Length: 194
Image 1: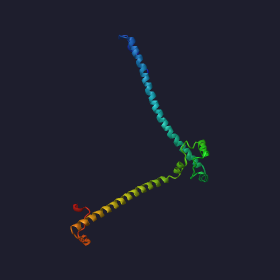
Image 2: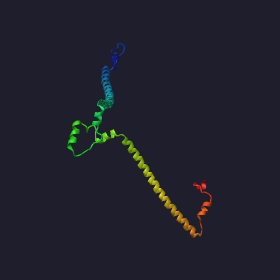
Image 3: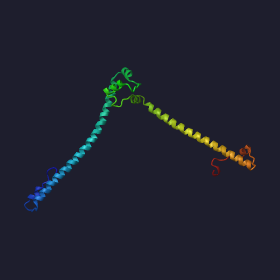
Image 4: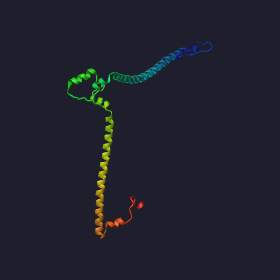
């Protein structure tokens, strides 16, 4: 049908066969051709639109990669002494200073997110590792503090138990010497179950 090899007129023009309702057959054929062409065009347009989105995403990535390559190439071309002289490692921000804002707007630095903090973070990436170490150190300190607190509570409970035991022993008139504890067998941490 689409490549022109569909000989529909042979149905109507065959001398051996009789076709009833020729006008209805032609109408159905014309409706079929219109509907099929619309459906095929919609499918092709949908395919093209989907393709365009993929091409745009790929073009965006390629553009950013080319910008990075250009920046690195320009940086390599600049001599070392100029690079050391003009690379700013420290910047002072004054929020109410209008000239700084106009300068950034004129050169488009605000559009690309080039702030002093982002540049400093890019120049000193080891700060991220240091912050991770500090965070893990703080977590460890919290764990140690919890263990100390639990240890103090256990000591207080042990002292309470010891006081109750002494009170019971005094009430029952039982004498207990520390030497008796040393002579007895060592008590397993598992108690009776060992």
